[in-house]
Length: 181
Image 1 (cartoon, rainbow, N blue to C red):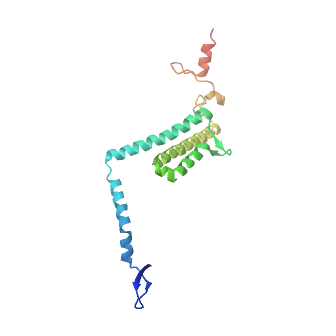
Image 2: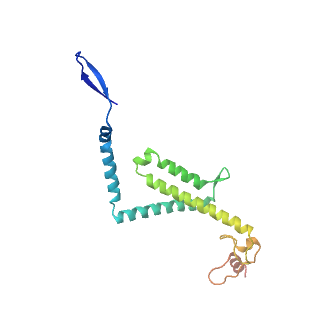
Image 3: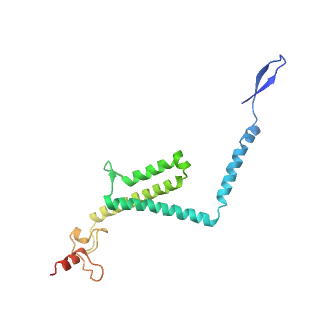
């Protein structure tokens, strides 16, 4: 509802209220709609190279997030908060939360923070999947000589150590060579 000032016959100014029409409201918002439409067209007119560059940068950033988690897990081991929640999952949520702040918008780092957070989520999912597979492998019997899961040789489960020969030597073979004197 708009208010305008009109001069009454009694020669003093008093407000007169009238209802705006639908078309008047559409006209008031038309410039906002046109700005939005122009922005969307500018985004869709990006060249194929620009789109490819965006995808490559996002993929590299997601991979960097996963690499950071891998480096931290390799150095410190996997972390769990309160004994149940993976630390990389919490880090991903925090990065996504920071991406929603005004500071991230003003520094134009919102897409980077989201991509790093996605990398953290991917690392958490990979770590969780690895853990589930390791638990399942420990519960199911396997063929002799087949590792239960990577990183742990079959001797962990009571199977004999395989003879590899060639360039790939097991820890047992290296120990035999060291003690040959």
